[in-house]
Image (cartoon, rainbow, N blue to C red; front, side):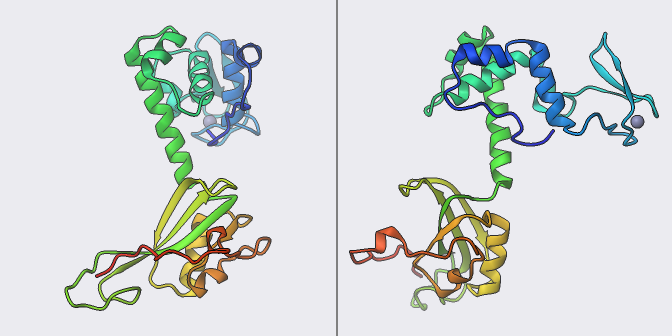
Length: 245
Ligand SMILES: [Zn+2]
């Protein structure tokens, strides 16, 4: 199913949630719409024509007769839990910043702590995988970083031999609090290499904040030119933390 398709409005009240996602049919309709936004599509032959096997809640392809469950291959398929329990879990887990314990989640869902833990774990994993593919967006601070290559008496700083260069990009809140981080190994800090990292990791519409190397100026964000970092304005920048070798 399409990633990130099921999203709950922040601050949705519990009665409002129940009205929208309180029954198995409502939840199922959301999953079906997320999985096949343009209508049923047979995973075996690509056929669109289908009938319903209502007794088993399956879609049957008219062309090849293959029966497909709308939850097959999704995290929802891994348990016997009703979809509405999964949806309730998503609701409760996303309503507070701190999250809730699996004991508390189990109590709210009416399932054992073990089941609640498993649900929580699977949802967290799904969010992690979604985040891994999602480019950084909004305000993004970008900098160069280095790993390893320590050699006694060797050259220090950026050009030191044996060091592995990385581009580090951090998505932040407008106030500068870090939200998500992406690291990408780069061959060097040349414009081409950094542009490649930016293309893989950053949303083209993000606002890149960098005070570093000239190459970061080449990060392709046509709508949002590179701006000097807020922390650089008005006071001298503290020594940059770099690996020294
Ligand atoms: Zn088919």
